Amino acid sequence: HVGERVRAVVGERARRAFVVSNRRVWALYGSLVAQGLQRRGFDVVHWLMGEGERHKNLRTVERALERLTEARFERSDVVVALGGGVVGDLAGFAAAIYLRGLALVQVPTTLLAQIDASVGGKTGVNMRAGKNLVGAFHQPRAVIIDVETLKSLPRRELAAGWCEAIKHGAVGSRALFEATRDRLATGAPLSDRDALADLIAAHCAFKAEIVAGDEREEMTRTDRRSRRILNFGHTVGHALEAVTGYRRLRHGEAVGYGMMAAGEISAQLGLLARAELEELRAAIGLAGRLPKLRGVEPEAVLAALRLDKKSFGGELHWVLLESIGCARIVPEREVAPSVVRAALRSVLD
Image 1 (cartoon, helix red, strand yellow):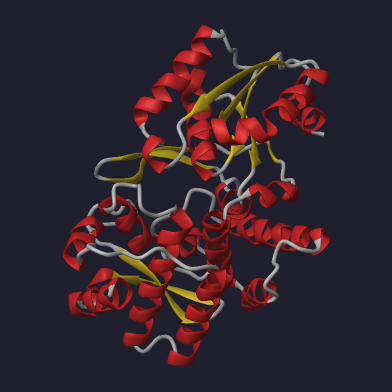
Image 2 (cartoon, rainbow, N blue to C red):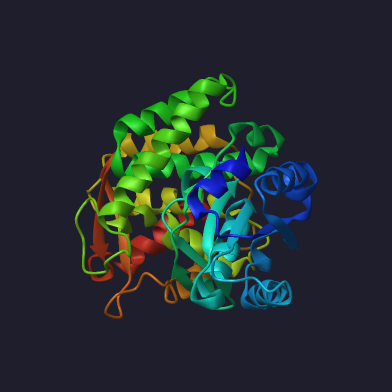
């Protein structure tokens, strides 16, 4: 049904659809998506990018823009992102800047993209200095999710997505946290398609509610419904991705480590009860085994933290927890470096 849904949101003037994907996803779903679009009158041009965070950069964006130019796409046309978070971020950024903005439709095929990356309008690419340092806000006209695509995912991709799901509950909703944890505790979280779809819809609704109240992540906001709370686990997570060259960790895996580090900081500052920290760690453990971080030094991670794009007024701000479901934004000056080092050691050892 992707063709009819895209047509419904972009109107009848759109003639072309630029489908961005990668080889793995295109081999699984490309023909279905292309045929659906063609049935609704779209001329389909597809373009495949490399797989993984290391390809989410300005050089890849430039190649996408060149292909759009060669195919003579116009302002009335549409970009369709078919894949995971990397594809969605890059396709969205290309759509945001080509001709100052083409319509974008997200068709996420990974759990992380379905519940998080495709919702909210953040697009961007990485630089050597850090993750997502170049980007734009560009809201999709629609997000089209088919939970059947999750059955094709390897274990690590699912674990990465479940880590992001745990994050949503940890910062904003104990009920969502418990629903996610309980789903994982069954040992077969992809069984019962209707229940899975309902859980994914609940995650999308949670993020959409936060984004609707703070679309562009106002940096002066520190309240509990600020979009900034969604960065829980991302401060250390992004640093880990950078120091490992975007090759050793999937984004959600890095966030899993980042949440444990931020939880440890929260506990050391007396904000979070140790029992709730253990509850958080247990939920992350249910998501799946995280890869070892042998050879990653705390000092390298600390150096990478200095380039975090979430700094404000020259100061990093931590998203910490007061309890499961309740986040607090804390300025760097209130977190001693020794506390950060101890938290990093707790996850790197």
